[in-house]
Image (cartoon, rainbow, N blue to C red; front, side, top):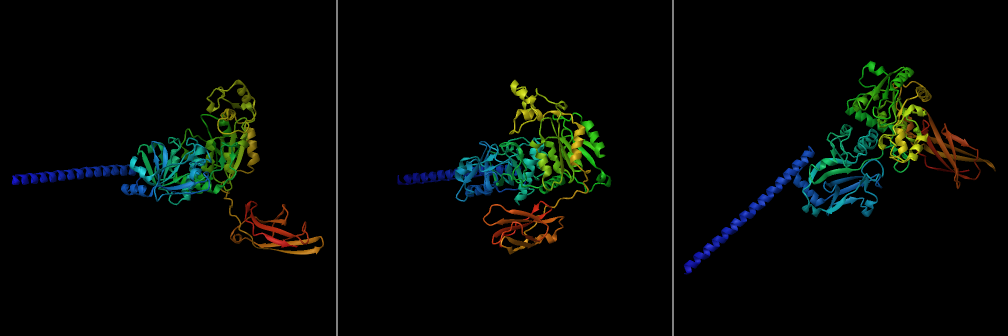
Length: 591
């Protein structure tokens, strides 16, 4: 019996061992299967990431970095209106349509604004300042929450995340998007040609998407396309927001439209941008490789519109302009030609003529010395709508600008029965309609649905040619000559050196103050047409000062100079009447 009992115990032990081994093998198989599934999922997510980018990515390392380090943010700018932020591992949930900042022990957020981040936003996603449809912010989660979320798809490119403001309108495309994108990419060294643009405003490609493609070698991503790649997208390195330094116009959301109060861009930067775009389009300018015949050819370009705001006597206008300036006149149309082909024509034109409209932003491709002629329908005051006048007038653009306004109501054709967005007023009360019809000038207004403005701006026009030619003659004193036009100098003088003063008392009520200085250091290396000096003299304790513009470096003042009085004196240099240098340190001179 004892032997039988031993055999049973051995069998039980062997059976138990067998069960343990099988269980261990099954557990290992399940673990291997799970690991294989994780690897397969990571491989698939790696493939998805590489579908977005040519850059290779170690998915496992990227996921560990996100889990361990979380999101990191450093911003420039003091306010949401001038802030651009750089992120490592900023994520976007396509289902919630929210950006996500994952917190870990290693993540950081500068500036750390706390609840002020929502007053009203961290930053503007577009270059249009403080517009409530353009605000950017993010939600916050602990990195541990990643365990319960869909596995992220990583975008390994350096990305610039922004909103386009209105990609169907050329003025908005250039002013609000292309120029700010171009110079934001210049601002950060890793936003080079390999950076990817990500547009988050929700629009489709739009009519001018090919222009955005010129800014990067990689295809831009639209918000809608992010859904196709996964539920959680993570940008390994991204910049969010746009520089506003290149914008010159505000559209009237808070106050009636007009030039920005503080314009920071000059024509030189606009022309650098235009030159870069033309180079990418393989367009040469005058002075390039054209034949001698092309170089000598001078011509006028007239923009033709085929849908609204038409010039009803277009052929007569073209003939009159050709006769007046003894130049060939050509017509271009956005509806019939590609925009690059239009840029090529405009870049060599001596005069550009167009009704007010977005197509006039193409004037930034004109050569120096060319003339921009903007035509306005009846009752629309040119002084109230000046985006293209402002552009032409920027220092360094070196363009001449002429505005013409239809003053004869009989020379306009309005369309009151059209939809409101095309200038129709049939939906308005009869009293409002009569008020608009009787008005001789659209009053200043805010953007964007003023019915009187829309009614007038969508009128067609018969251009009164004699009055247009008179306006041209009054502004364009000489025939436009693109060959002689040279960039105006924008070099500013430095401080005057070694300023000093000497005083003498001539009598109890008579004194003299002599001020002298040396030229700015950089002047000896420059060819400057005109150099003058500005001197301010202020009696100590007084609020007013006496300003003088002087041609010399040494001057003696006696008028209004009192004996036994202390004067504060400032001196600075001026080049060519408008290029001001900094004031030298103030002098204290006692008579």
